[in-house]
Image (cartoon, rainbow, N blue to C red; front, top):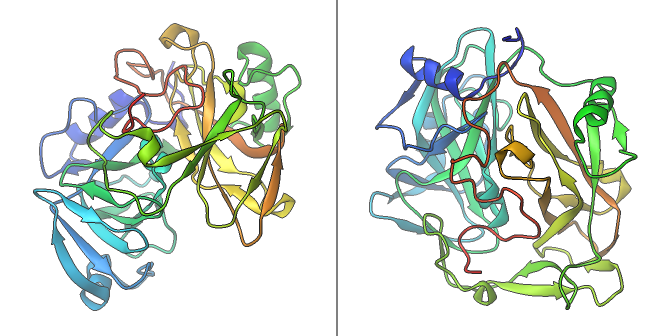
Amino acid sequence: MTRKTGILADRDIKALFEAGKLRSEGPLDVDQIQPASLDLRLGPKAFRVRASFLPGPQHLVADKLNRLALHVIDLREGAVLETGCVYIVPLMESVDLEQHISASANPKSSTGRLDIFTRVITDRAQEFDKIPAGYNGPLYLEISPRTFPVVVRQGSRLSQIRFRIGNALLSEAEVNALHAAEGLVATETPNVSGAGIALSIDLEGTGPDGLIGYRGKHHTAVVDVDRKGAHELLDFWEPIYGRGRHELILDPDEFYILVSREAVHVPPLFAAEMTPFDPLVGEFRVHYAGFFDPGFGHAGAGGKGARAVLEVRSHEVPFILEHGQIVGRLVYEHMLARPEALYGSGLGSNYQAQGLKLSKHFKG
């Protein structure tokens, strides 16, 4: 049975292309349409700009680029994007949304794990990563590598977009009922507040050495975002060991890869998104929100629960993070219909049944 409100599944995204409501400058990649989202591809050129911006309700992004662009970079053969710089890239995909369909964007999992800050911008936008219902026009991606310089090219996929009809969020009561029926996180007593279910940090560690995470190194070589397993882990990351202390002091301006204590499960008729925990409880945040597709951690799609990998930064001061501390919340949304393919089932999904895991670009 198809719902009247919810997240559009893969078949619905294909239908948008067939109806001309989604457009692309080239043929789609085979795996570009995911169970509940579409990967967005970089176009042939990037604009290095002086600063991040929103166009505002009266302006096109192109108007702002004419004023703020420092130079144009050809991406057709690949180019290096430097840390600390801001780039705007017109995307290969554009939209002509109907009045009842809106969309939101997020960095792909691998993008967040490389500490590449990305946000989608539309013409006349007053918010990042939000595409209002009825929008007709191009999409742009703001890119700012934070830790590692990266090589990107035309067709690289750093961000993803979800389409929805109406309000698809589950209420607190619905989240509690779904957890009781399906087991959303691996705990008997979930912390549910509003529409979200809490995730906490695992600082007990794994393996004989008690590995609890990784800290990004500075002044590294470049990471090619399109090459899997091509880079030596220790050239880019410093492993962090708990040594039985069950806590970690976060240094300001450092980037950490950590993992949730709970395994996560997204049933086939639902999609999830991680949102940062209330910043008033501490001087840190989970740096990138993230989409969790239907089937993530699902036993029928190759998973028996999967940990959520967390990209964490402290703010202005050092902050002690303790084992079991809440660091984010998962909000769940209804799907319009069950996807044709679930996350992890023949899609080349990189993070099904994961534990503490760096992005797909590193060996091991």
